[in-house]
Figure 1 (cartoon, one colour):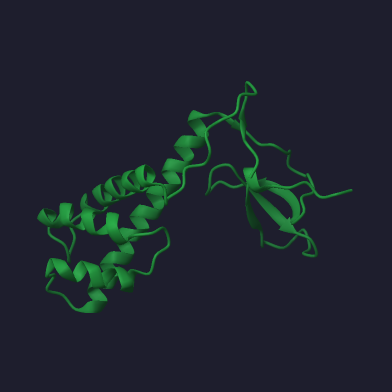
Figure 2: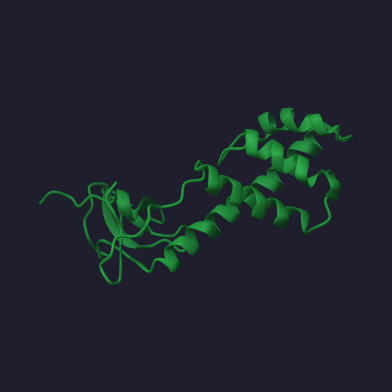
Length: 165
């Protein structure tokens, strides 16, 4: 991974990782606050702190909600397993969205400039744009696919490698 730079040419902090303790804590606290801001059919508001503790111990970005349900069972939630898993899927969606917000905040606060312009040829394909979903990420048309193809690979700025001429 190569370093990224801002508009003044200064190196910026590395991309926040969901596995970093402080980032994970922020994702969970902000994401579960968002989750609990709406009435929940499975969890009571007084279970929020216990759920935060369980998520801090067992949640990982893109984790399996059914595995997570085993640990949440400690809360004595009186619902069927499928309702519990469904609620955890919703909670994890809030956490995943929160992580994308944290990435966007990092990108914007550091005024990161893309290392290569659109149209550059990378080892994986041609840069066709910058992702609107994930900060500091290119949309890349993989070699061999027609330009009309909607398929694009996401390549983080710091992972982009120019193709050898």
